[in-house]
Amino acid sequence: MSLHDHKILILDFGSQYTQNIARKVRECQVYCEIHPCTWELEKIREFNPKGIILSGGPASVLEKEAPQIDRNVLELEVPVLGICYGMQVLTHLLNGRVDPSPEREFGRAELMVKEFSHLFDGVKNKSIVWMSHGDRISRMPEGFRTTAFTDNSPIAAMEHPLNKLYGLQFHPEVMHTQEGLHILKNFLFKICAVEAEWKMESLATFSIDNIRKQVGNGNVLCGLSGGVDSSVVAILLHKAIGDRLTCIFVDNGVLRTGERQKVAETFREHFKINLIVVDAVDRFLDKLEGVEDPEKKRKIIGNIFIEVFEEEANRLGDFEYLAQGTLYPDVIESVSIKGGPSVMIKSHHNVGGLPEKMSLKLVEPLRELFKDEARALGTELGLPDEIISRQPFPGPGLAIRVIGKVTRERLDILRLADKIILEEIKSAGLYKAIWQSFAVLLPVKTVGVMGDARTYENVIALRAVNSTDGMTADWVHLPYELLGRISNRVINEVQGVNRVCYDISSKPPGTIEWE
Ligand code: XMP
Image (cartoon, rainbow, N blue to C red; front, side, top):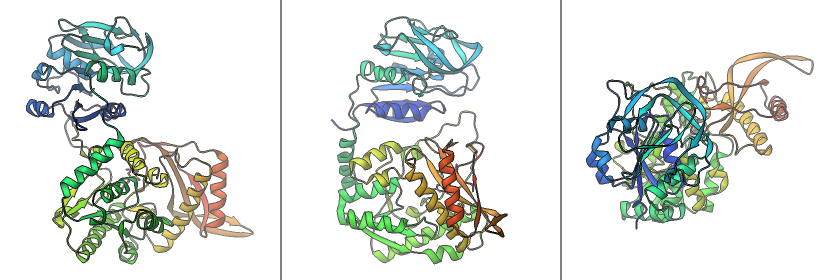
């Protein structure tokens, strides 16, 4: 049996929770993939899922061009679970009736289970569920029965057990649904009868085997940033092909204190990986000097990175493959139900231009994984906790945290303030609990008084946010004590700073980085 025999297919109708469904299914150690609701029947057959989940979505089946699935999907003799909009699609396709609710139901509701159902096996008779819908089922398709209800939804759950078709008006995939995971587990194990085979131990062996098959005797280059993703990729490749892997770490001059030494120590000395550390500090900083525009900073850093990497690769010899830490969320084809591409807020720096430019083939061993799975795999492979639980750090580094003109001097001020902040957050035991915490250097000077003298110096902003995927975030309620210590230390120890502010904006409307 391979790791992918027991698969679940999630057909996406554009819900903001679709990835949650996939993560919950994976948490149950079952492999699943997300595809757009328009995925062709042929491809679905070929994928050969043991069960299909229809996601929620922002549309109404009552609209003219409402997204649908091929009706034949329901004839595949594979169990189907429709969630929210997915349940309405089921109803619509099978000639039931969907109408606008008299009241939009949004948020908490109490679910009452009224009939035995495999879906609710072992689930409490009364529990809190999370709803978000404007339409509701007013007549079920033929052969269906209601198994649970809430005050506002007489048909909160319905099923046709013989045909293995199930619908839930609420969202089992969100945290607020108390019995959500239990219900999903019932669908997976009791109804679809899948086996829990997606385990990190087997995944490590499986990935290493796959890399060997793909790469054969070829040589592989890997851009190592020291972040979780590229670190896991490097370790996996090293286990698979040993010295035929060469990693390149580029010091671009906008790294944090000690970062370069740490990477060299971990990968070269501890893991004995071929690691080339390129000192390109002057090359980057000369081009960045005086640059103010955030997008320009990103472009400069992205372009020089590609140049440096390419030169280094040419110098090193022949490589056929480039390893990248692409994760599953980067691969999922997004569904744009209401039309129109999503607006670009910031151009993220990546090495996307490299493979074509250097005619390298890609090795992307994390393509099927969510970030938490990549972390679990890293732990399985023996990566130190320091790397596994590292907070995300943007490719353009400190350059986009020096607001306004980049100069070497301003970078040094920021670097020291950042070091102090991280030290304090770590010694308060909060580093792991926080998504990102860092310093930002503002482009204003303010008046202060130190001793008896007037000062006119820089302001540091402290940013600390919590998030699950970086898409939305909220500022962290750091203890006043800690804020006080950070402020004192930054002002006393960083020359040229006389004021510290705390950023209390969420995302949206703010972004995590200031540029
Ligand atoms: P924003 O600022 O858009 O950031 O809320 C969301 C997440 O992305 C990181 N970030 C970047 N990462 N290159 C990167 O590799 C970039 O240009 C970049 N800009 C933002 C940011 O740190 C946060 O984790």
